[in-house]
Each structure stands twice: as C-alpha cells, then as structure tokens.
Length: 439
Image 1: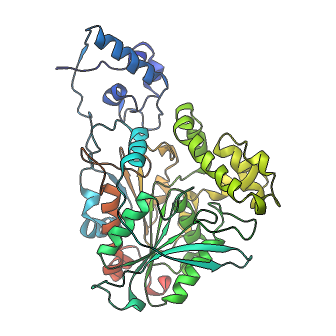
Image 2 (image 1 turned 30 degrees about the vertical axis):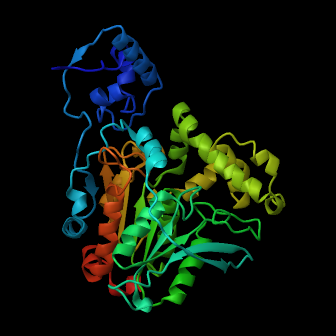
Image 3 (image 1 turned 135 degrees about the vertical axis):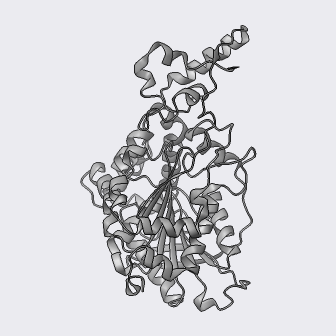
C-alpha cells in the first residue's frame, strides 16, 4: 500500500465511465489501463485531476493499492504467421523486448504531444530533385545519397529506403530525420517523397495528394528504379504516408518495384480515425492543428487551386472531415467524404499485397483507434506482421526519462530494414514469396 493521487473520482461514482476510460488521466491510467481495449478517455478525467489536486492541497490523500500496470512495461503483441514471426525474432530482436514507455508520459495523447515538442533533430543534408508528372505537375524528392557508404560503395547496388511522411509532413519532420540517420548508419541510400505542395515547390497544376491516390507514388518508384534498377527498394510510410504505401502495394501487387514495406502509426480505417479525432480533446489537441496546416497549404497555393475549388470555403474548415469534404473529395472525384475514406482505408486491402510488410501501431494512438486494427486479416496472411504496443501514442513510442533521441520505433525501423536488405532470401522464404515477385 502507498499514498498516491486517488483514482478517478468520476469513475468511482459512475461505473459506466469505467468502461470507457483509458489511460490519459494519470489516475485512470493506474486503475483502468487495458481493462477496456476499445475505450477512449473521458473528458471528465481531467476534471478528476483538478479534484485530486484540490484534495491534495487540502491534505487529503486517499490510499489505494499499487497496481501492476502503473507505467506498465509489456512485450508488444506480434500478429503474423509462424514463419514470419521466427524471422522477425531472429533478425529484429526488438519485437521480443519489453516496451517501457517514458514514465511521466501517461497516455497516447501526452506521448504524441511530448514527442512533437522535444524530439531531437539529427543533422541531415539533402540533395533536392524535382521530377515532372504526367499531368504537368512536379514532385519534390529529397535525397541522402550516402556516397561515403563503406558497406555499399557501389551506388548502383546501394539499397534504397523511400520514406513517405504523414498528412502535413515533409523531409524536415523529426521522425524522417531519425529514420534517415538509422538507414545511413547501415550504408543505405534514402529518398523522401514530399507530398505535392509540402516540399517547398510550387504547384504547377491544381492537384495535390490524398491517401487513396497512388499515381504520384507510382511515378516516384518508377523514377527511383529507373535511376538504380539493381538497387533493392524498401518503402517506409508514416501515418497517412503508411496508408498511401499500403494502398500502393495492394494495387501494384507483384509489380510494386519494392522488396518490402514498413509502416508506423497507420490509421487503418479512415472513417473510424476521423471519428476518434473529432472527440473534443483530440480535436483541440490535434485535429484543429492539422486542419490549420492543410488550410495554410491551400492558401499558399491559392492561385492555382482556386481554379477547381472554392478556396474561401475550404479555408473555413474546422476539422479534417470538413476539409476533406470541401477539398480532397472534390479534387479526386469522390461523391462524398465517406466514399473517399472508404477508398483510402488500407486494412481490407492487405490480402492483395505481395511483399513482406511490418506495421507498428500503439493501442493508445488517438489517430488510429485499435478497434480498427485488421487483426483477423493479418492472422491469415503470410507476408504481413502487425506489431502492437500497449502505449506509444501516434508516431512517438517514447522511452526513458529524457526521450529526445532514438526511440522504440527508430530501433525497430533500423533492425527491419537491415533484415530485409541483408537477408533477402530468408525473408522471402519466411513470407512465402517467390523470387520473381519482388523483381
């Protein structure tokens, strides 16, 4: 027994709240973590925190048991075929390690926010390239050629990692910089595919990007493979970039030009993710910020975009759903936002993929609710692995007391890309893939 802040007072009085509370209130985190895997935090938890503070100031301290899941450390759940599991345990030992989140980050929201605020920025020097598209537009690619690679001194065969950032991201995101640092240590080449309008380039046509349209990615892959036809290519997508990558791999099947895929914090069902992001606290902390970023991009390219949309109406969007209804759906020919979200969701398309894929998600990710995780689908596939941590938030997975540097997701990324490039025959065998399928 120990004296700590009491459990959520709202939960004590309202049993129904216990069934929906999950971890973001530091008190509820102690008592309810993983009691309700599909729950979401109740706003009243934060009222409870204030109530607990008042009680503490008044000298009232309730005594409760020390629960075993306080700052819980758990081994991530690995969902995949037996053969793929054996390969990953051998070549990516981090999948079997206990994941211990930063103890002062109480839940997915805090992990996400803290990562965005304090994550370090490794120095990376890019070589920018602009390539043209069939519609007359242009795509900005940022290269790290790694000419000093001792493991692969010959540029023509140097393995290449193609990185796809998130919704409003580009090559300057901290997770991109860390991924490039990890890949460069192994001697690999990296190239970042910046979404149209977010790589510093001008929009030449009234076309941007969305998670369901793989045309630009196909152009980029064709370009990269044209430059280095004998160099293996791995795709790594983060958040919306992961959705785009998975949709591309499912659409191209055996003709993807890639030897493997890796994703972090993918929203598996766009509609369910949107609903989660519209919860009051999630809207305030994340949705509003992302919507503002999207609107700023539209405003920056107003001259070209006003030819196809009502820019002023788009700029009044209060959340991502409204933005997609007024802009994305119209731009890409969908009848409604719902139709777009259905087409963008990659979960049910996984059976069409034909290369090894490892996906990392956290159960407390506010962007990607775990009731959308495609567990049943993945269990029946030989080539897809889903690694699930209890905590980690969205593109965070922070560990240690001062989580500014390398985290769990960077170590997993490093080990997986190394396993793919250094043991190509073993991973194909583990996933039941024939040699010609990744040519």
